[in-house]
Length: 76
Image (cartoon, rainbow, N blue to C red; front, side, top):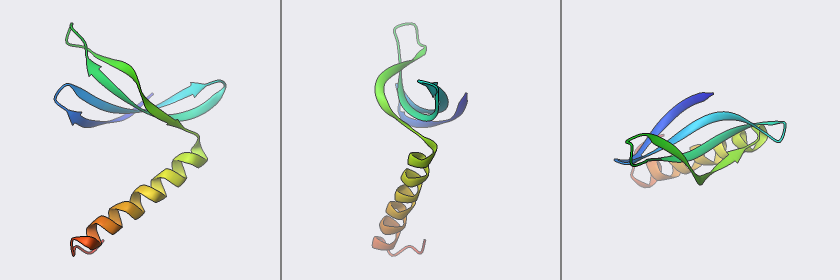
């Protein structure tokens, strides 16, 4: 199930999807590239998280954003 897309480059997108992998629900972030037919196809480049891992990753990403903003003098 598609959750959303992150525009990466003109010929690539990062798709965030929910997948069942080995009977475990995972949140998958995967690079999709345009093939010769002009369609986006999944690549091997990406990462899958369990729910707990996704929560930890989200917390770390938010902490990173806050540090970047504060280093630029922008309140979080």
